[in-house]
Length: 92
Image (cartoon, rainbow, N blue to C red; front, side, top):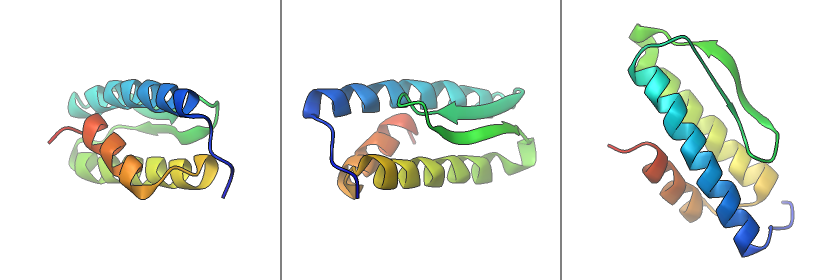
């Protein structure tokens, strides 16, 4: 596990990531083009993937699992914090 960032840096990173995820969600919901996601730290979370209408729910699941894995392994963020971030980024 990597050392954690200071609280201000971590908060900024998570806030920017939630904003990016919401933009990607808009593309998936609209079945528009390709989705890709880069973390504000510069790491590629999801490479460009075409949106497929029959697979929207699965693509959201893939995106969530990639985000969860990146935040846990690369940033050392707790599972509780990741859950809060995903709930904010993927409203029900």
